[in-house]
Length: 157
Image (tube, rainbow, N blue to C red; front, top):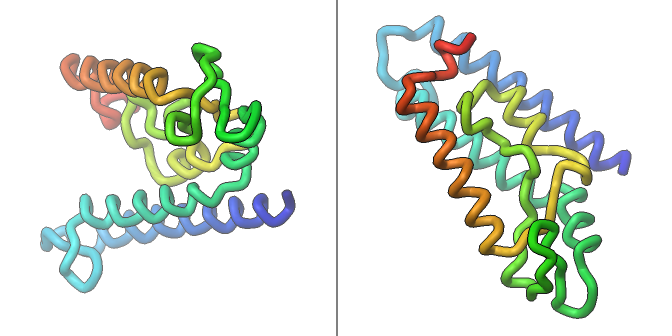
């Protein structure tokens, strides 16, 4: 447990550093469209790279495995936390109870992203693929509704 906590602290510190670097790069180089990676990456490409690396790192986060282990009822049998169906290994997803990126507010910065990505056991649920798809579709609809109303994260703060 101490080892995973240290990893989380390191990841959070790295995210803070990335946040500081991206802010300072933007302040230093307002004249160029590609302020990252020796002038090869736009801000969007840089953000995608960092978010992708963090999501890959989260796949090794111990509480995710513990959640799946707790949902196991037998060999290749898992109980969905939502509909209580018993499904196989290929049909179970480990889902964040609270979305990593808030559908109503959007991306709020790397600190918030890391805090919501690397949650403890009580922040995960094991749900079957149909329940996961239903939850994902509801979050997408909420995100689209926020966009239609014209509420961007910058306007909310």
